[in-house]
Picture 1 (spheres, rainbow, N blue to C red):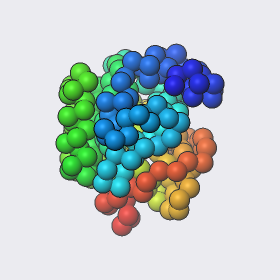
Picture 2 (picture 1 turned 90 degrees about the vertical axis):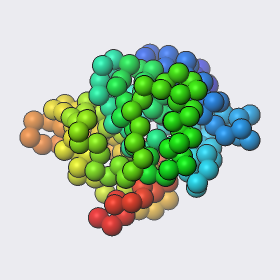
Picture 3 (picture 1 turned 180 degrees about the vertical axis):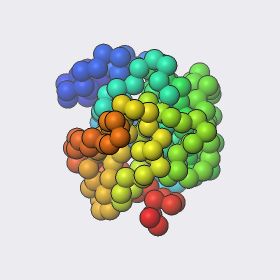
Picture 4 (picture 1 turned 120 degrees about the horizontal axis):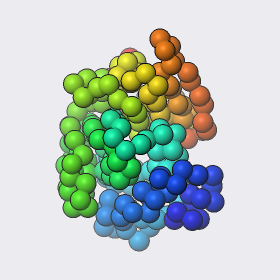
Length: 203
């Protein structure tokens, strides 16, 4: 996976590559899908949600520029895999999942694989985790129609938010960096994520 899907497709951050090689992805995939755990594809994890393809997990981590000791907010725990990779990178991870059965399964997978120190919360991630802010990095693993303003406000100076944004089947993966009193926005690539539910849909 690391050699064929990540190194071969322009992932160059060695810390990200090492973390992806250490986290047991198959243990975050439902039993019926485990034979496909390392496929270059998103896989169903129940409740209409997916675990992102390995390349997209690595792409997001690389764009976040996560380093040991960073405070990171993960909006959309899902399977728990992305949170585990962030923890393996040395981050203090705060992860929120709106779908309770997924949150409980994700928590169990994180505990089973030794990443039980990830901070988990069941709820709508639109407004972030104010009491744990500010964050060096924030990622969203479902697509809101617009960038959630509360998540931008919870970034430290220089902090980075990576989020897929759009209404339709295809969205744009954006990096928003807090620069002084303003924001620098960079478009990375077209992506396909499940829609962000909850407050994001009524804003």
